[in-house]
Length: 254
Image (tube, rainbow, N blue to C red; front, side, top):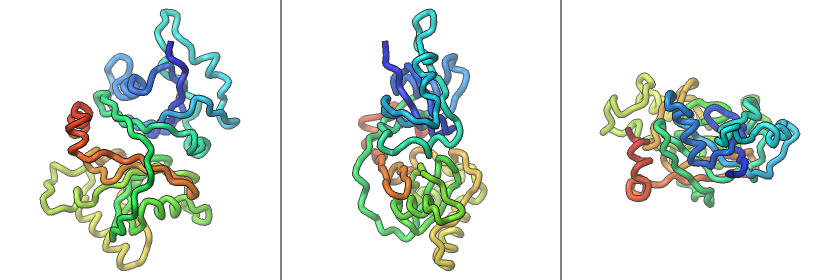
């Protein structure tokens, strides 16, 4: 019998106990137990020893148990509000990306990449807020800015992906290649221009973005930080994905 596991879902934000191992849990989130739903999933595996007074962890032993027929308990939701801020970064394990048809890719933590010193960056904030943001700050500086308690717009922690601006505003892109945001290339260029003119650190490209990008828009990878610590989960390049994770990559780019 599989041990009980803890997962931190990013879309939507939730803490979930489950008897499913990570890959099976991802398939369950993406397509459901009856294959009637279809949605991408992003989640962390949490240290099973994690405990918190914010969540009622005592119900896990009582309610996350096998069904009468011996089948595992798929999910027991322990929290759906202010979840990320109450889970310490040191409790986070691997990050899992699941496509709409249930293909799962696991990403490991790695050392932070050296700053690219780029003029502009494009960030997809995923949790707990999820706008698309243009910035002149590198990932570490951006995470510190967003979680600065002195700002009226701060959040306790932020999980985000660094996107490749050239994918959106490169001259070889066609409308069919781009996410469904009206005039996306022009809007991003306008935001970058505003950053340069006003000396602002960030500019919102889209306030209501909902997974408008595809995984082939990722540049360096995923970051999660609280202003003091920043964790990095590098995203493999297209060649590595095609060679070693072909089924996932094919599903992710459909």
